[in-house]
Image (cartoon, rainbow, N blue to C red):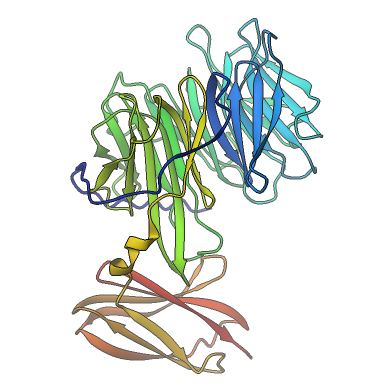
Length: 426
């Protein structure tokens, strides 16, 4: 998979004109939490005695803890990709060795399959491409941590070397054999399953260990959103990577212990991005869209210090110091109306053969880019790429080399993006 990373940088400012829905307690308030994690459509809260799983449809928690048992601590949970009811959990035992278990009944019973000499399991991630591969990383301040790979949905594990890390904090899988790994004071990247690694340290400060890494993958429902958002945080702040310049850019001057993002769709192919962080001074900060120049403190309503955050289409979730998971619906969409694009795009005829006319109207004079993508997100044609006056314009498109099927036409102009699905019938 081609790694395309996009950054729009502006000076980080904490402002007060944004708002999110109130925080509401949803449970797990009686246990000390290590954190929370999302896998599939489920939320998991990890503890020193096991974990809880949250059913968003029923609003109930399933208890998979073992009160009083030493060595049952969990820090990461992922759902299997091949086997039904498969869960894989990572943690640490009473001898400070990392543990990896798998379960075929969603955690009711577990089988220990690996003990890591490299300390506790800090993170796990799986491929998004119906691939039974799972990666896990560990952290220790005494011995070298381990990067581990399972090719059978968590039943067996092998060690991957050559990445250069001593202590690892986060791992992300972008596709078949493409992995990002953070630890120490840098990030490494492989596209061949760990045979070779690229070091992405570049201009990150020396002697500043990375606390967390976040990767927001492309969204399959929005194939034209063909970038990957990569962020890390150390003691000097939150950084975002620009692959074009091969540089890290500071987007928030506060050190963070957890990062979460989600795409929100409010109309047909009209969307924004929400970014949430938990800072080491115990705040939850929120920013809408990818310019990162308007951060909002949304900690109000949380009765204790936040320790971890996750976000999905279903909401934003925060784990608190001392116990309790709180949920918010995210940014209040009632306030969105003034921000909807004034730019329009259409095609006629649609379906078409052999040609169609693309009509687009831009709200202000400037550069307009009209491109067509297949549903895998591959660019198949650039229809318009020039300066246009404010108003309506048309371009004829006759794709002679394309096969029958659905394609996405995307217009970008004046900082706005709109799109239209079209069908070629031969």
